[in-house]
Image 1 (cartoon, rainbow, N blue to C red):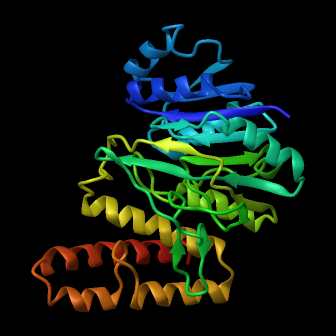
Image 2 (cartoon, rainbow, N blue to C red; image 1 turned 90 degrees about the vertical axis):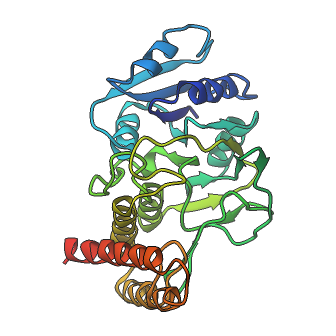
Length: 307
């Protein structure tokens, strides 16, 4: 079974170098490494011309002209030749047994369509450490539980995976691609959720095993969806992507339930009416109400897009 590692990258050469160094140390070497880079990303191409950076890795550089993670990931899927395509971010460093565990999992279960694992997040000089049993689930209400960075315990079946650490059987994704309708010019929030739910909907098993691990060093983003300074446009785009995915992937009754839960309740990230009402009592009422309007605007955009 051949394993391709797919790494989309953009203007983060130091992070990419760390990622490739981690791949060189694997107990089971990848059969192929595909790095997808923008044609105009000279810093990345200059890095990859240094033979010491990839070392002995069987590296292919695939150029992409369109901005955004969706185009890069789809370009990588088209370029990959492996039976399994293991995807990680350029700002992640897979643990030494990452490829070995991925290959073993797919070899042992023919029904396994996708596998994810824990990403140990390094942030502001510390590791975000915690323990959660519930990971990667869409609840009956339509609420999404992530927790991929905090999962503990054994391997278990899930509904969705996280882009920093997710692998797919080629046969499961032959006719599935990352959704080009998703908005944004960079990270394009929830593309991983949309893709993994589509694989699940196609009848494949999705598993999460926290032992299939990477270290994740969240790096700078070069678009409106910055990690610490998200614009209202980026928030509206993220909400559009989120609701487009729910409406696309959930059956009708669950889709309707999710719409009303997110409209009436929601979360701190995607506030509903309950959060809007509480915002009126807050010292940051104007900002919180602006966030609520952006989120609901994106949700209604998604509803109109699929009407």
